[in-house]
Image (cartoon, rainbow, N blue to C red; front, top):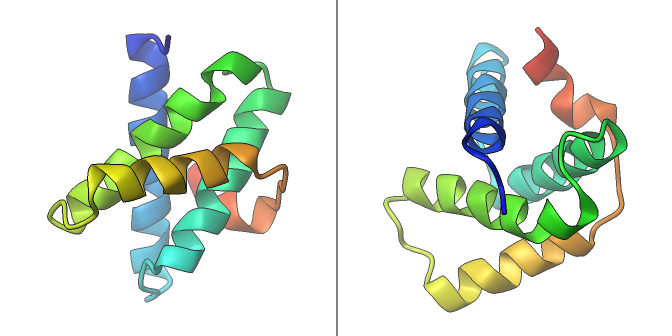
Length: 102
């Protein structure tokens, strides 16, 4: 189970990511979200900020934040499917997460 600190980290980094996108005059798309979410979770895993058993829960938290930005238009079933897909992704592309380090 994710701790409050981990949940705050997920939300804070997602907000930094969104701010970075705005500064670059880019729009958050579904594809860009997926690339970000997969990369940031794999970065967290590699840095031991989350454990492998927490990855799905972290993916669910991120998809929840994304859905909230869309005024919760994604159904709970679809959210779970998206989170499972993100949790299975092993990609880590630093270009997608560079905004959280600025």
